[in-house]
Amino acid sequence: MKLGIMGAGSIARKMAYTVGEMEHVEAYAIASRTLEKAQAFAKEEKVAKAYGSYEEMVSDPEVDLVYVATPHSCHYENMMLALEHNKPVLCEKSFTINAREAEKVIEFGRSKNLLVAEAIWTRYLPMRLVLDQVIERRVIGDIHSITANLCYPVKAVERVHNPALGGGALLDVGVYPINFALMVLGNKVEKIESSCIMMESGVDESNSITLTFKGGKTAILHSANNCLSDRRGMIFGSRGYIEFLNINNCEGINVYDRDYNLVETYKPFKFITGFEHQVEACRHALDEGKIELKQMNHSEIINVMKIMDEIRSQWGLVYPGE
Image (cartoon, rainbow, N blue to C red; front, side, top):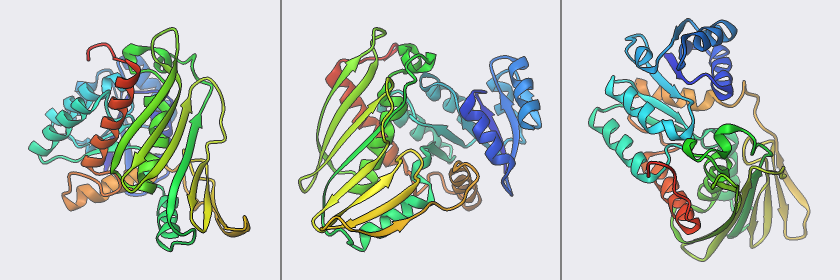
C-alpha cells in the first residue's frame, strides 16, 4: 500500500518514520502548500514523491491512501478533495471541526464506496484490547465511574490558540479523555456538563467535563494546553479499580482489588511508534473492500464530534465559518 501524506508538520513526520519501518506499506508521497517544504520533508524522511499542492498528490494514480495531517480547520476540505479524486482517507483527530462536517465527509465517502477513517490512534493500540479483556473478566466488578485527563503546556503553538485553525484544548487534547470514556463506558451519553477557562484568542485553554451515561455511570474528564498532567485514566468498580497509565499512549495497566492490593499488571507491547496499528487497520480494510474500521466506526466518529459540539455550545465557542 502506498501512502500519501497531506501536510508536512511534526505528526506527519512521525507517520512517515513509522511507515518507513513497516512492511507492506510505503511512505510514497508528501504534499505541502509549498514545493520547497515538501521536497525538504521527502529528503529528510525518505519519501519517494514530493508535491507542492494537495491536488497534485491526490491526482497521482499510485497513491492508495491519503493520510490527512493538517490543522483541524482544514480536515473537511482536505478529505473532500481526496475523496473527489477517489482516494480513501485516514484523517487525524479531531476528525473535523464539527459533527455537520463529519457527517458530510462520511456520507460522501459512502456514496463513492471509499474508506473514511479517523486516526485517533488510541483506538487501535493493542493495550486497548488488553483493557477490554480485563473489564470483560470483571476483575473489578461493576464499573461505576472513571476519571481521565490529558494536559500539555502548548498554548503558544499557533494551531492550538488560533480559532481559525480550530484551536483550543478540547479538539487538540480533550478528544482523548472523551474517547477513553467512550471506550470504557460505551456510547450512550445521557447528560453533558462542562466548563472552561478561555484564552484571549477566544478558545479554551483548560476545561472540565462530566459525562453521565445510561445506567448512572459517570466520567469526569479534564484537558488543558497550559500545564502538564499525569495523563492517567482511572476506572472505579465495585470490587477494585484500574489504573491506565497515559491515556494518550498507554505505558501500562495496573489492577487493584478492594483492599488496594495490586493484583494484576500489564506492560505495553513493543511497537514502532504506535501509529502502525491504524495504518495496518486501513490496509486490511482496503484489502477487504471495507469503508469503515471496526476500531473507530463512522457512527462513533460522529458521536464524538456531537459530544464536542455540545460542549462548545455550552461555552459559546464558535469557530470562524460555522
